[in-house]
Amino acid sequence: MIVLALPASRMPSQLLALLVLAPLLFSFACYGVERPDDDDTSLADDDDASLADDDDTSLADDDDTSLADDGPLGFVGSPCLDDSDCQFDGGVCLQEDDGFPGGSCSADCDLYCPDREGHPTTFCVEEAALLPAAASLGDGGCFSRCDLGLFPDSGCRPGYGCRVEARANEPATEMYVCLPGEESDISSCHIELAERGVEFEPTVRADASPADHPNLTCHIEEPVWIKSPVLGTELRYYDGTLTEKVLGSCDMAHSLADTVLDVQPYGVTDLLHIGTYNCRVIAGTTTLSRHGYGDAIDIYGFRFDDGTQWTLVDHWEGGPDDIPAVTPVTEPGVFLHDSAYRWHDEGYWSTILTPNFNNAHDNHFHVDLTPNQNFIELRTSSWIGPAPYFD
Image 1 (tube, rainbow, N blue to C red):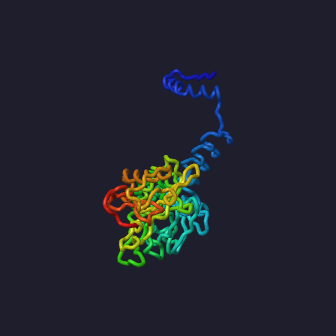
Image 2 (spheres, rainbow, N blue to C red):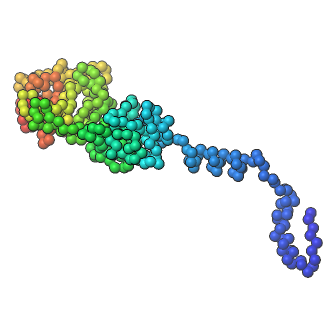
């Protein structure tokens, strides 16, 4: 117990001091004074692993080494922190501090860039279109093309826009590529196609002319590479070879998607075709084929989930000399006939030519998107729609 002897004359002030100090004195007397322990693991300890620790790996750490989770890693266009994250010959990391959000793997190029499976196709972008850090690479820098299959919102990683740029040392060749910034050249048709789940790559296709008709111009409106499978349906050539991708207009890609969705409930797993874009005239004429506009496809037949294959050349009933047309009675014949009519009734295609049209179509449906047309040639007793061209 602590006893304080105070003169009577100073009692009031001393008493006041005693009242103030009493709690502290009582604490010292009961518990003593604790000396800081070198092994203490409190927040004040230099070796503490809390948020205040210099070696902390939390979000507050300046030395965070995690890569952005926004696409495949290790190749052109991938996020990176340093060159070691770019796992290919000549790979360099364009840093976020230099204007590349999350970093971007690239390499110098003078015309072409390497490609790798599982990553977007690449493109060698001319120096003039690049930020200084990338322009210093050389004549051009490698960047990924826009891929709305991997990045359906915009075709690119967050922080990058899909823009049309020229190839290094070949300025006449342009392509949709992912560069820093939100500016984008993709269209509403592209966005809607991506929202449907169709895998495709927007592309740029220079106008061309058939070799024997230089006065005609083949032009594809909003060209895209449509990747197989289309909404689960494989694309194959008529000989059964898998088709990795086909070239066509964005509108044609929508119509192709409508077509495969229409036949899937019948068990169709594969669509067999003869081709899409082809810069040529209609046989025997000087008129440009709709294939030259990239809005046509020649459908050869279908493969089903039980392995069955039905084709126009083997299973269509009737021909151009049968007027009125033969009414199909076999299961394959009915399926092919009714499919063509459904596509016409639903407006998937504006022109549908069948083997009943002429002998040039004895093995396929020619379907296209001729403007202001609504035609199906089945030769029942009359044509449905205005007389079309022969293609």
